[in-house]
Length: 252
Ligand code: ADP
Ligand code: MG
Image 1 (cartoon, protein in one colour):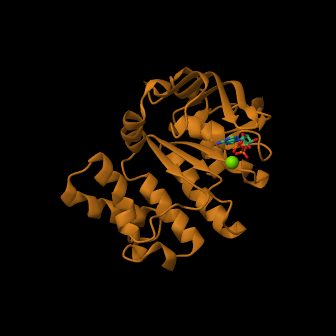
Image 2 (spheres, rainbow, N blue to C red):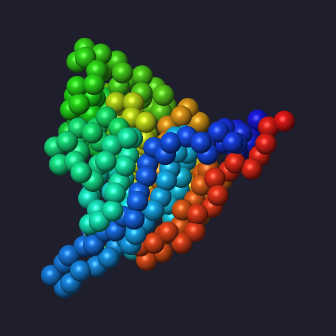
Image 3 (cartoon, rainbow, N blue to C red):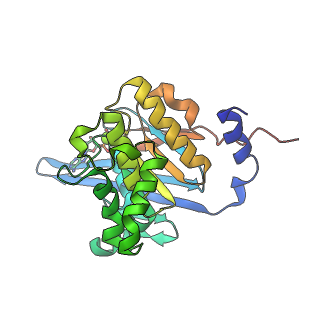
């Protein structure tokens, strides 16, 4: 069965009843700068359900990163409510947010953000060390199995600088999976990769979504849209278009 078909079947009828895993209610974000204040997001309402693979697209400066940073709790809204994995994260303080994020959201960046002095396996162990989600003696074995899952087990004991860009992004994805979070959030994760490597990394995300992870990804590469179950278009800080979730295929 084609991947598209599998995704469509997965979404047919089932998701409409489930509770959203991510919910933004009239969320605005204002940046105050010496030259005045700037509204980066205005009254955004958004819901994402379990297992969706959602793309956020829009021109540079449209508010994509701001939106994503509100979902991960990296940034806080100026007004409105952000509920993620049953938690009102707009109400958490920085310390509570760091622990909450470590367990609930795997974050992936365009430039990988691996720590250069740690090996790849040690990078993947970091979130487990930080949140103490797995016993210390199990963490390396878990890191190795995640590196196997993303296809770079043989790179485990190298430093990030010894890996290609695609391999580094796979390592970052393994790190994002360290605590088995229900949600993965990625800000232009293929923006620094060539097109073949981009496709491989997108396939990896698609597989994770098929396994039940909820993935929200910022991208400006329109030709990747075949991977997503839904695309949200932002313009000037507002949601201008949402393609409907792919629920139209019925299984007979
Ligand atoms: P995108 O990711 O779509 O390119 P961003 O969310 O990064 O857009 O930015 C949206 C707008 O908010 C831009 O005009 C940007 O200049 C502004 N902005 C983002 N972060 C800050 C900040 N920390 N301080 C002031 N303005 C910001
Ligand atoms: Mg951005």
